[in-house]
Image (tube, rainbow, N blue to C red; front, side):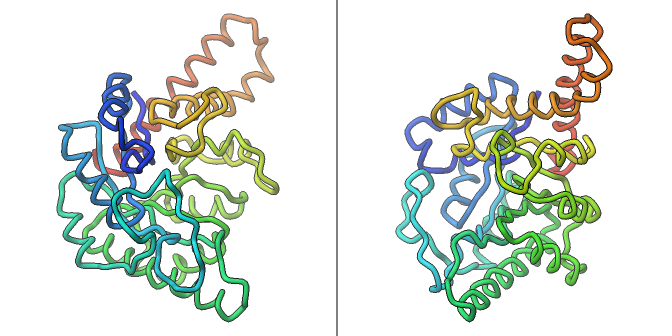
Length: 299
């Protein structure tokens, strides 16, 4: 069994076949947590999850890229938007709290910081970052009130996120995951010190300057690893086109391969013992990451 802990079947990319995608996912013994990025996609994630007795769950939250700041123009992603008009919104605490009453809601997320699209002037940039931080703290308050784990999104802002979590220990969640982690070893260790899980997805197959995914995976204890797709994005190289939750197995296989590198150095790849060990590592990854997800999200 596998659990895709970060999917977006609530996005426009699946509007014509979401039921078929979920059916084949569950038939392949893979569970799904659909992640909201604003109110409408959060609501859609809940609606999808409520159709299934088990195997499909939801997280709700306002992604920083969708926060209304009036300071930067964000390009609308046709893969994401559904039936709503605006991509930007203010965080409505009461509205999200009401949505969280569904027993299918297992986390607040994805929330955090995203400095990829940002204003060019220093003054506007400072205000832009401040607005994101304010929205993040409000959502951390909601998570604390509801006693729900948090799914953190962070792009080009790990230093600020770590600082916020360090300075606001009362709001720092006891249970959380740094989703789709793209950072250095020092940042990785900070999140591990907080007790967070680390999410890995198809981005580990890419090459990003200054990021050593292999080393990050090696240094993350198995009991702190979650696997995810972030579908419809980050399709593994073994597949062409749209990503789906069933392809989370390729992420698990890559992690197994990396975790098994030391065994490769001590065993001949053609030996029966090596082949047995190789299979065992994947089984361990599948079992342990599934246990990790169940423990974090209470499913």
